[in-house]
Image 1 (cartoon, rainbow, N blue to C red):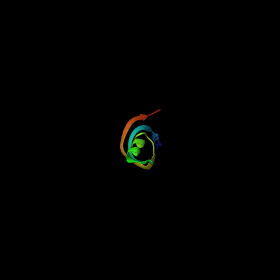
Image 2 (cartoon, rainbow, N blue to C red; image 1 turned 90 degrees about the horizontal axis):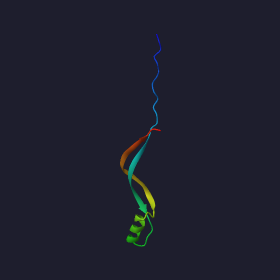
Image 3 (cartoon, rainbow, N blue to C red; image 1 turned 120 degrees about the vertical axis):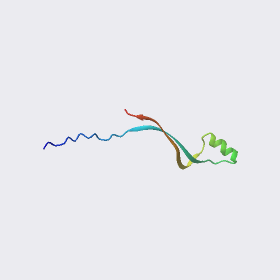
Image 4 (cartoon, rainbow, N blue to C red; image 1 turned 135 degrees about the vertical axis):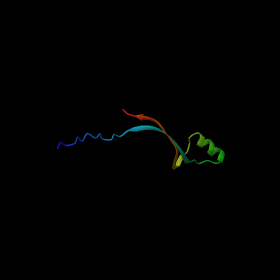
Length: 64
């Protein structure tokens, strides 16, 4: 009896570019709420919590 051919293809690892929108909590030291708002809007401060992904969108498959 002939042996069956084991030509099963192996799974490959694929990469993709994803667009992820996150909600994070940031902190900044300031003297007033207005100053804090201005500093945070300018990108000053640091992330206090890693946040949660609130939207994920597939952009493209990277098959190089």
